[in-house]
Image (cartoon, rainbow, N blue to C red; front, side):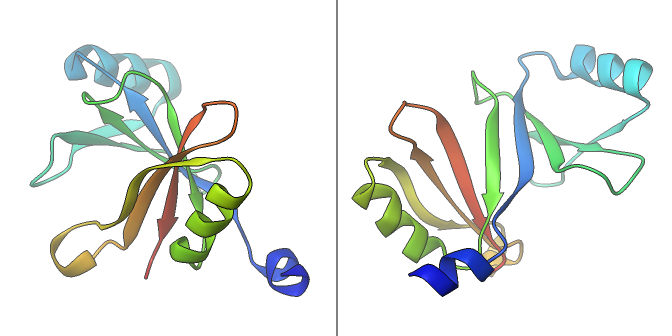
Length: 123
């Protein structure tokens, strides 16, 4: 576990921001931060596009009530086993994103303190 854990690049890559009013959120983020907010085809979310390459990507999502950070990893299945082993809870197993997982996979979990988070992998 040692070498694989330390050499794998796990980092926060995406943030889901709750929004019950997309128009209000769009105006807020565009006017204050200069971010572009646009609809994502075939979804009920809006992408928040930052003007620089710094920071994780983000989306506005009407189905969430809390901010949900995503962590990029190369192997969701391995991470899910470790999450359970170290006191976390799996909320949603590995799930494809898009048709034939064209945008990768995700899984939802809670850490031992009850914080909801997401794992993301391109495979």
